[in-house]
Image (cartoon, rainbow, N blue to C red; front, top):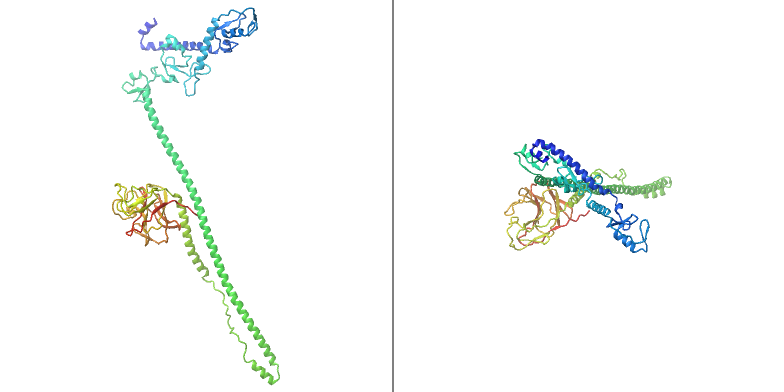
Length: 576
């Protein structure tokens, strides 16, 4: 009757009916599974043999009422003289005829099966779906029922595999929050995705509000969204990495700034200490000069005083003679003695004092002028040395690029040396190669920051060194200037020249052996240094860089072939 009624009823009448049936089935399911799982609460001691301490295997009962495994009690009696119970020690006159306790055997078998099944089932992990029926320790669900809205472990799923009415339920892989997976409007599983409204729908929804909308299975849309999520995650990770790199760059900049500040303070202390030494020496020299002048005046005065004292002594003696003669009454003796007084002692005209105090007018000024000149020279040396010391830490490891080398140039295997050979080599045509000038660039280029390198030029009669931009003309003749992309220093027997828009001739430095080249790309500065003398040669400022810059070398072989010495990229040796 129920089946016929269901066939005749409408959908509106059938839904409440089936909901009542589902509720009743849920009750039956839970009740049945709980009864099935009740066996797991029996104690193992109730089904254990007191001899082997394991679950009964073919349990038998003795006349005294105790139970043992058949093999255990038989073996026990085989080893005894008397037949007695291992538990109560009751003696039996003859060996009892034992029979298997059928009820206990079946209960022990069921208990063993239940225990094994429970032990084999894994406990639920945090990321897994738990069984909704387990009362105490929740086990991992193996299936979810879309009719009962319940997830079951293997034990509690057993009624769905045995009871006929439960077998018809739709079982799926374990799902959590089953109620949330059902359509609130149609009470059906949300198993489709509407691409138009970007919502999950059931099959009934596709026949109603979403009739004309494209829908796909949830798994298909899940894979699409997972791919998008993976891409999004990659983008997020890339953004995180970029920001971490930015943080590291900022930290590195602060660290370098601190190092630069410490180095600058140390250099400043060194320069000021040297200047203080020069000033102290100047003060000592000035004091010594004044003291020597004073000593000379004192010596002159001392000598004059001695001379005057001698004259006073001679004059005093003459005065005594005069006084003595003035008292003589003897005319003859007076006249004879007066004759000896005609020639007075030899003395100088002492109407003016001949000792002149030393004049110090202009002494300090002249000494200061000399000090200023000395300090300027020494200050320039100290400043140049300090500046070179500041730029040397920006050393970069550069090697020469054979693809750019002029056909007569010979490069070392390590790419650190170059000299001009006597004849051109047959090399493949390369757009990067210089065609008319004996030039070569490095493999490395720079488009930001600061960099520094040193080149040994010892014994070279003519050379070019500096940096060039990437787009320079390598196949034709060109003027080397910043306008054409060259920032270079030129050397020949007439001296040094910076090849600017208007050439800047620099003082010729004797025995120039090593040249340092420093570039601050962001500030637009190219500087050249005499490394051995630790002297700044020239700086081009206000430069505008918009391309990659390459270190530039030109050997410039002369007609007499006497300029074959090598240009050598040298490691920086920082010295105080």
